[in-house]
Image (cartoon, rainbow, N blue to C red; front, side, top):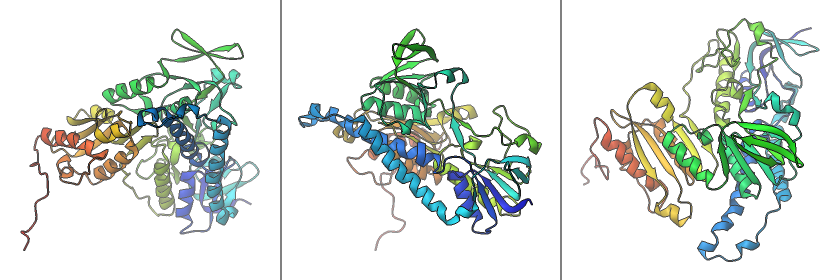
Length: 470
C-alpha cells in the first residue's frame, strides 16, 4: 500500500530540519527522507569546523606580533598539525552530535532512502511509494569537482572531505578563493602549510566593489602566494601533483577544491513535474514563498542557490514549513543580507552590494573609511582594512556595505541591524561612539553620506530634547 502523509521533506539539513519543526506544530503525519550523512553541512563540513581551524591558525599566527609587544620567546613555539586536526574533529563531532541528538525525539519520522518524484504528490523510494499533500525539497549542495580532474582523485580534496584529514600536507594548492577558499587558504598558510591560491579574479570572499576587491587581494597576497588565472593540473611529478597557472607551475601534495558548491538536484525526477528550468537546471520558484510554480512543492536551502548561508537556509525552511501547512502560501520578506568570511581581517557584505546598486543604474553615495591608521586597530596590531558604506543619493538612507576590516563580523551586524530599520546616515551620527573602539572609525563615512545627499538633514552631534527639562 502507498503511505499517505500531509508533508514530505526531502533532506535533513538545516533547511529541512527547520521546515520539520514548523510542520510538526500542526501535524504528526509527516516524513523526512534522507539517505546521506546526518548532522547538517554547517556542523559537519562548513561553518563550525572551519572556524575551529581558523581560530587555531590565528592564535598561532599571533606569535609573529609578540616581539613588537615586548614578549620574548615566540620563536620557540611550534604547531603540531596532527593535534590541530584532532582538535578540529573533536569539536566537529560535538557539533554534529548535538544535531543528531535533537533528531532522536522524532526519529520515527525519518526514512533513510533516496526519493524521486513520480508526480507533484508522489515519491518513489525504491522499494516503496509514498504520497504527500505537500513536498519540500531541501537536498542541499555538494562541492564542484571538474570531471577532467577526477583521474587525479588521490590528490584532490573537496570541502566535504577536508576535515577528515588526520594531518595537513606540507604543500597545498587552493583553487577558488571565494568565502571558503580564502578562509581555509589563509588558515592553512598560518599553520605552516606552503599554500598557492589560484583564483580567476580579484573578487576574493565574494567582494564586488572594485576598490575593496583590490585592497583585499593585495592584503592577502602579502601574506600568501596568490595567482590570478585558470588553474591547470598537469600530471604527477616528483611524488606530487603538478599544478599550473598561466606560465608558472608548482608541485603540491594535495589540491583543495573550493570552487563553489552545486545544488543537489539531479536524479530527483523533477522532469516528471512538467515545469520549466533555468540555465543551471533549477526549477522556477517564487522567492517570497519558495513554491515551485503553482505546484504543492517548495524548494529551500542551498539547493535553490539563492542565499547559501545557514541563517538564510533556516529562514527558508521556516517559510516552506509554514506554507506547507497553509491553505494558500504566504509571502515573507527576507532579512537584510549579511555575509561574513572569517579571514583576518574579516570580509563582510551587508545589504545591497556595489554590483547590485551599479546594475540598477541609480546614483548612490559612498562613504569611505580606512583602518590603516585607526587608533584602536594600531593598538591591536591589526590596522588593515577598508570600508565602503553605500547611501541613497536622495536622503542618505543606508543601502549596503562592503568591507575588509578587523573584527568586521561585529561591525557588519551593527550595520545589518541599522539597515533593517532603514536609517539614514544622519540618524546614526548622534548615537554614542566610544573611544577608542573600532566602531568610531565609521563616523567619517556616515558624515560623508549625510553631507553628500541631495536633501541633507541638519548635522547634529547630539539629539535635541523634545521638551525643555523642568
